Image 1 (tube, rainbow, N blue to C red):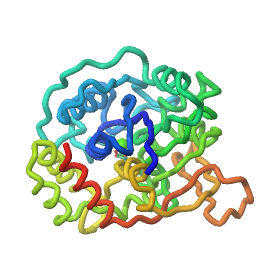
Image 2: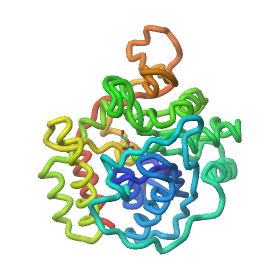
Image 3: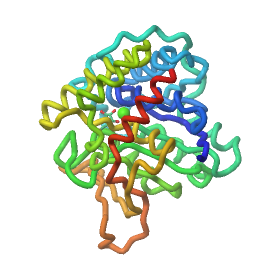
Length: 311
Ligand code: BDR
Ligand code: CA
């Protein structure tokens, strides 16, 4: 299986935290160069501290966390404490961070890390609003062609989760999303169509809790808290687990299925943040992203549970 060298750009957030833990638990498949934090689920001060807490929980506080943008490119920041709680990581008591933030803005760190390595060797994983990545793409126009790819959680073919039209990560910074989806790097998109098939059901949650380690107990607490809002809203047997799909795809791409499509971003108005996915290529435009739509959820949770047990 291929080994991926990645940067994880995120806004932890419980599901971002699980994505980070999955990456740390998968060293044969994933080399994590750095974490970059962006404002999203909660303000930046919290997301960057949360990233450092999760690394400390996993005993990996040497992984650098670069602090990025504290607001979207053009719009005011909208956060999601109603899902994630006041801290962004409600549901578990995490240790205080053992290391401070790394020097250098997140966008500059992305540029430096990618441009100093051979072309096509670093994958940018994004599980929050795309502000940091868009800024980096604007600052260094050669960045897109240098990346192995961008794998992101965001968007939806069907309904949104913040407005009828838009998913949270794209909604928060649609102008950044437009820059990213317009860049030359190959993009893999995990939108709500697929992540809503990855449900944290009671038996799946209990299997993680039963591992019994401090990391697994914390993960179970985070997942339990985080699933409540969506479970109540959608009436499903569990809340959808979004961000870890990005990492699981790198660990085992056979878990997911999708197809290459043109994707356009609506930036303004009542549909701001909508990802218009031309699944049947009616416009006859070249594809801009591989849009994932299906998943083997049982195998996904088997992988996640087995990997969390390693930490
Ligand atoms: C996305 O928004 C956030 O609430 C989650 O962390 C995830 O990245 C889902 O819409
Ligand atoms: Ca996120």
